[in-house]
Length: 400
Picture 1: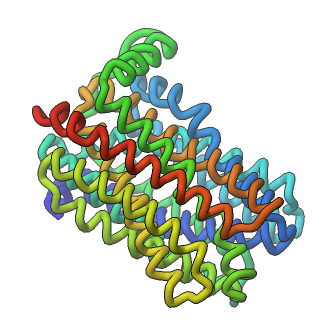
Picture 2 (picture 1 turned 120 degrees about the vertical axis):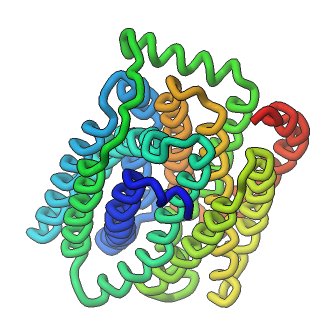
Picture 3 (picture 1 turned 90 degrees about the vertical axis):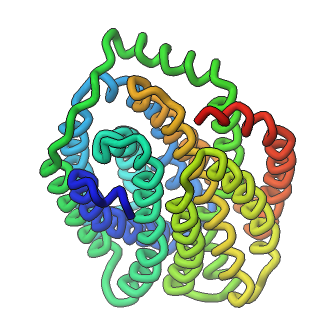
């Protein structure tokens, strides 16, 4: 927990804790609302796609734009816009004006805002702690917050949905953004040097660096393949909860919470890693674990098997994603950090969006278990490909 010794990071940490809990409550409530209103697997995939695809389309340019501006002030403004978006979603739902079209529009709006929010938050973590040696611990603690919210948020959302409406859950999320807005505004940090030149020039400089660096290029490919397959499970969870396990919103919360439990455990492991080499070993292990879990979960018909499989899947996805983010930020030069973080974020969430859309479309014409099983087979092939390159990756990162 040494990164919490830095006051700016403490302000961010506790504000982010409240905000993340609200975000997970909204995510579960929105997926349940979509399935309750339409019963459509395809629309589940489309709404997730609309929320995440801006990360792929807007995210890389957002990173270049952020490197030219005051990231701290920009992040405060983004939190204010997220508060407005969640409040509007709550109001529309409360007035029974929400429908498939508006859900897609609101999801896309959230995605655009997150395309700026995510790289802005990630790129600010290094200035918050000040010391390069504390950066991996700070990134792990940040991911721990996200996964702790993922662990406790969905079960809380399931309980809330049994006693209050989806609109109330959206309102809770709106209020949660105010905590992070306060935390970021209260920080006192040394602003990083701004990039010079046009957004296009700054963007191209970052792209050239990422392509020319073999470790960065390889890890981003792994990131894309992992999230287009394994991360797509989230889109299909309402179907598993209702049709496979014959449950309700509380069952959905348990499944999502099990994945969050595993993800949280992965960040506890990452928080103890001191070297890039150890983090790389965890990345490889996590990808293999996610592939195995993705083969077991769709074949299970009992929660006693499904919940541990979901925990393993959550550990694998989070361990690989957070580990890759840590390695990228550790080896990236400070002047390029915003752009490298944006490439990570756009790949992480953009390919998650594409995978969710594909999974929803396939499940609509086939069935959910078969869809996830096929993706598990693909991820096994990715694991073999990564293992064949593990030795060169270790040599490339030895200097770090």
